Length: 449
Image 1 (tube, one colour):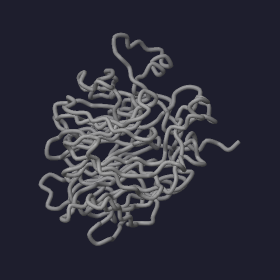
Image 2 (tube, one colour):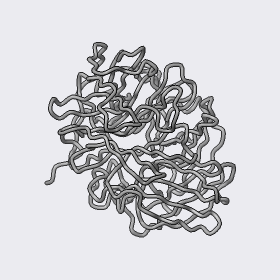
Image 3 (tube, helix red, strand yellow):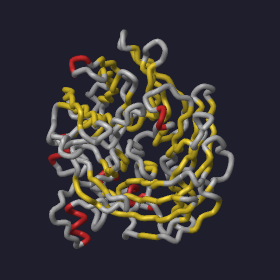
Image 4 (cartoon, one colour):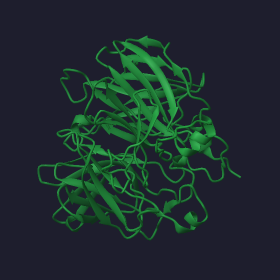
């Protein structure tokens, strides 16, 4: 039987939690970076059935580095406590409601830290030092409990906007959830769908919430067989994208068909001068068709652009970059707005060897190569204080060095990817390949997604 690639090499889990305050640094950490860089990802604990294991279903573990006053003050990694983790670790968190495998994202919002996952599980609140405080349904206002791994922040209001699905609680609808800057739900809209699609992410523009209704759906045969992740490619499901007016209801959605594909992550979306919705995204030809253990066995994503005319309901699809890539990001202050620069990580069969920077005005691409045997992760852009341009800032990411089986936090000049890192923080262990993270500045009350 073929080995499960998502349990080997740096996909494999680490076995312990670590706290380290004595961290070696080369280069100079910018003194304006005062806060925490956090990253969530799957880290299964205990015996694992490799034949059934799916990368997306592993127990959540958050890795974090606190920076302050030009120093790396600590590194921590902590499992997000669930009943399974509590039992495996022999702990007692009586009196706290525990979540599930909240393993996909970690964000700052309303002065709190939240570990997130999709498919119906509620958010889990963490302390500043990454200890699990318990389920927090946005202070009791998330009445249906299901949330998303990928809320989008409106940079003008600090509100969160999310597109949620829940299996098996909901079988026939998605739910748009709008969370205010104070961490309380302001509005929900149920959106009927013909099946239960996997809606990993969403997009936001000035006037619309973008819905991705694509042909990865709940597979009843897999669900009945007890699969931990019962979603698969569905040839019979029409791929479409919907534009929900921000203050509209389900009946107001403008639906437009697209070619069969799957999208985990958009880079950004905005409305152009003609009122068209422009979306840059990482597009897969197929997903979870042959590979039922993770996302990289059927096809690899390219960077594409969809331009949607709301009046004609036509989508113009075009290719921006043929190179395989994922985990796209842009300047957080330009989310939902016109922008020029986007960042992603290059994907190869054995890892993530480069950061890619796209100049979407000129169509040019530059790259930061991590080096032989070194692989990175999602690049998070932090604007420089007093920035004089959209790309004037830092890219922060974790890098795994196979040569010593340990990881580093690297800080890169986003304006010059040909230069060596501004600073490198050497960690005492490796950070397995994972999903998403955030830079959360000290004293922040808003959203950093």
